[in-house]
Length: 168
Image (cartoon, rainbow, N blue to C red; front, side, top):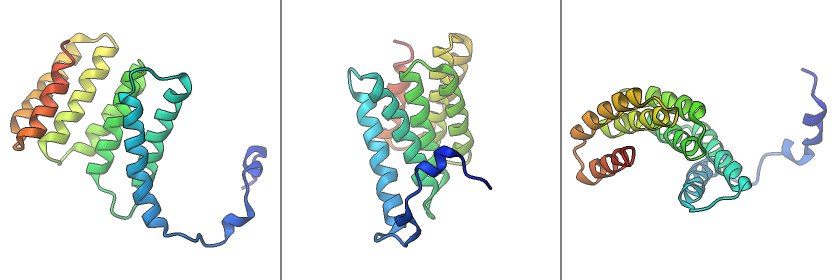
């Protein structure tokens, strides 16, 4: 396959050698690091446009690093795509918020009610952002039904609190 001009610009002859670090450990580190760094930007009261772009890139990098790990699970990807949906909701991008929430729900199938509940929470948030109150209420109702099944009280309270923020 022929390389594009941009591809040729990022070639690095040092990359052909074996890295001087453990690749699996690097993926493990960066999956978590990028997720937490993106979360820090979500929580930041005021972000610059560059920080908004960085928040999206960090989430994408986190998902990539999870997918590159041999121990990646559906739960890891459910969480990653939930975060992607939340980021796009924060950025007022309903289409991407919904797309990421739908992927989150796919990965959440068969997981504990906590993860399924959060997938529906993400769908409810995206629908609300898109102006579809009926669809948002439907997804929120499904999320609340899952919340009732969450055994850990702290986890249940987190989900219920996030759901209540949809009504504010």
